[in-house]
Image (tube, rainbow, N blue to C red):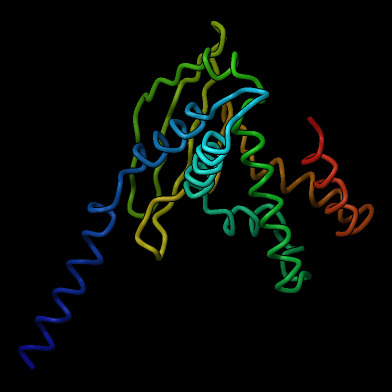
Length: 196
């Protein structure tokens, strides 16, 4: 009986401490931003530099809870997809987020300054407030994170001047699916991903 109580107490303490022991929400955001800023730009990248860029993309992508974002963006339409189509959609959303996060030109990256204002953590939710300065223009970007079952903080939404990325996606996706079809959504996502 005493052993069972000790095991239960240990489990309870670990579950309470997990959010504390994990990388902080701000560190997750900083790691993602640093990966974006470390991308190499050139028309003649070596294989080593290309591999470096792939690694930076992986690091940035791992900071997001893509499945949670996909479910939220698709909302009521999520249940209409089979497992293969869900996986395909999540891949497209991941590519879309990476495309949005990574500027196409080196001069943009070089001129980005990110100021980390603060982070607010309440239970398993967090908000990291940043100010992004690009060529003297200021943009308020906040990252919303949650603590996952895998014991890590992950970004599940990005607010640009208090406007939700996922809410925007949800409205756009719903309009396309309701007016046309889910296939049309996939077609338009492909077109956006293949555009410069």
